[in-house]
Amino acid sequence: MTLKWMHTSSCAVTRSLGVLGETWTILIIREALTGTTRFADFRDALGLAADVLSRRLNTLVDYGVMSKDAYQEPGSRTRFEYRLTDAGRELEIVVGALQQWGDKHLPYAAGPTIERRAGRTGRPVHVAFIDDLGYEVPHADVETIQTDVYPAE
Image (cartoon, rainbow, N blue to C red):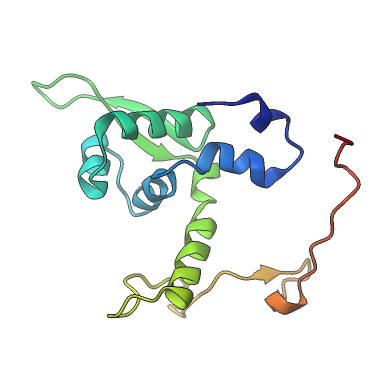
């Protein structure tokens, strides 16, 4: 469901949540990041009702987060695969940040179920703020500054 306020809001978080904030959407993206592409596989992995999954996938396609491509196995009807676009793959940082936060503040008793490592070196990686020179900035040193681009409401 697309709402006018989402498109007209000057807040990027509001606009982003208009696409990504519905229940199950981030989990669909998480599954896609691990290679899931087919409707039935998303449904099976998430235990999600087909109508809800269909609506969420359509929203992600409508907003360019995923593409929808037809395929047909011999003797079967045409079906669709859903693949992350470049914009969708950029959400790995968001999913990684959520996982990192959950591992720290809501830890699973047996420990983390996913690790992220640099492909080139195999070293562990984490989500962080990086300045324009490429240096990590500790959270306590990050300032959020509102700009003057917000219109008077």
